[in-house]
Length: 121
Image 1 (cartoon, one colour):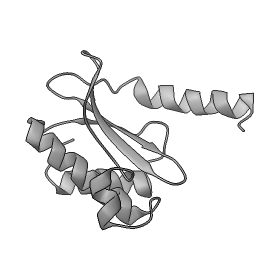
Image 2 (cartoon, helix red, strand yellow; image 1 turned 60 degrees about the vertical axis):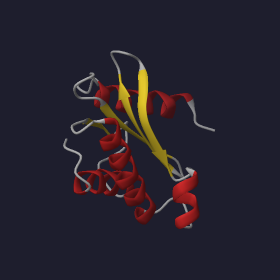
Image 3 (cartoon, one colour; image 1 turned 30 degrees about the vertical axis):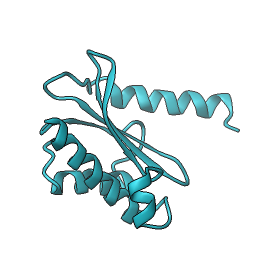
Image 4 (cartoon, helix red, strand yellow; image 1 turned 135 degrees about the vertical axis):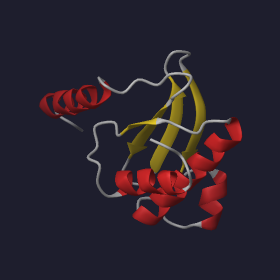
């Protein structure tokens, strides 16, 4: 369990990263959450308070095709999947919310895969 000091530090990092990133209807926010076992991505419209698209390593389609959960290969698959879903809804441009994580490793792999699939940010 986290101590109070580390919880406050994590929240400080999260708020620092989020103070400039706001999702609108024209340009929603691509938010990333990673745990030790899985990685999750959501496209959120903050003005409406609604999640438009979501994908994760726990989604049925990705879980069947690839094994494992917390590696760069799976993060790339989630990035491609969220980009495909975004295009089907009509979203072409997003702003990236790294959500207190460094732009490194799995977070970077997800972002680059989404860019490669055609999502602009």
